[in-house]
Image 1 (cartoon, helix red, strand yellow):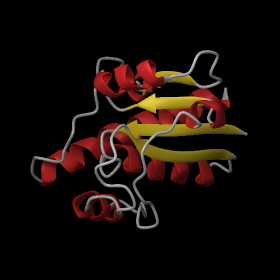
Image 2: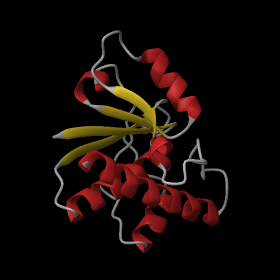
Image 3: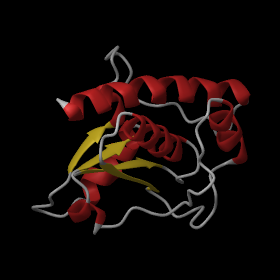
Amino acid sequence: MIKVLFVCTGNICRSPNAEGIFRHFAAADDVEIETDSAGTHGYHIGEEPDPRTVKAAAARGFNLSALRARRVTREDFEKFDLILAMDRGHFAHLDAMRPNGARAQVKLFLDYHPGGKLKDVPDPYYGGPQGFEDVLDIVEETSRALLARLRA
C-alpha cells in the first residue's frame, strides 16, 4: 500500500482538500492508498479545515469534516512513501527538515498536474470564495492524474 502525505502551511485549506479529494477518488476506484495531510507550521493544530474549504468541497461531494490540522513531523519521512508539497515554499521547508536517508520522496503536488505548467497551488485563505473554487479545480485535476500515475 502506498502512503501519501499532502502538506501546506497550516493544514486547513490546500492540503486537507488534497487529502480528502485524493482519498475520495482512490476509494471510488477501489485503490488502497493511505493518505494524510499536515502543515509546515503549527498555527491550527487540532482545528477543522477552514469553513470555506469545507463548504466548497461539500458542494462538490467531498467530505472534509473529520480532518484535523497537524504539523508535519520528522517521523512522517519514515511513515510515508510520498510527501507532496502544495507550493515551492513548502517544498523547501520539507527538504530542509528531511532526515538523511529518509524513506519518503518529497515532491511538489503539481508535479503531477496534467497541464504541467503550474508549480504552486494558490493559497485561498486571504481571498474570496472563487479562490477556494480555483483550488478545488486544480486539486481535482491533479489528484486524478496522481492516482493514475500511482496505479501505473
